[in-house]
Image (cartoon, rainbow, N blue to C red; front, side):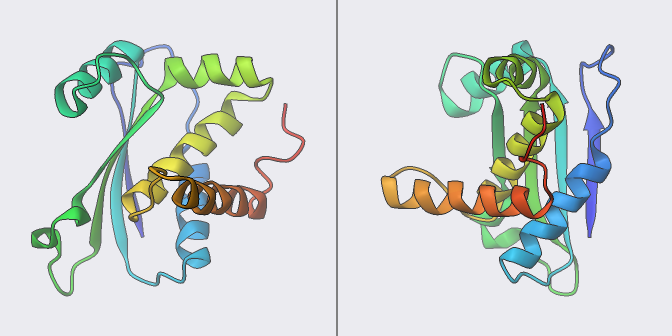
Length: 154
């Protein structure tokens, strides 16, 4: 299992979430009974950059907290014998900081929540209707609870 972690436009962001992200990905795959070798990227950006991505690729003219680009939406990306390339997750550190403060919990908790949300999108989950939302958000809670990231962390 591999995660390519790239920092973009973040000169004053000292935290490294590589270990947390690895643990979340491993737990998500185990929870979903996925045993494939996988690769993905996570790029930490500011609100300006995620606004640009959201506008250019999703035609939504505002910043957001997390955007996922799943490569498995198209079968041409799978090469037998090679790791599954899940895609890319962009997380706005600006949004994560604001949401952590708004919800009264740690930045680590918010970053882990957003990463988990992005991973589930890469694995084909969505929240476009009530049933899908309940399933996806339930899985997020299960994954983060297994790692004790959501309990008692302020």
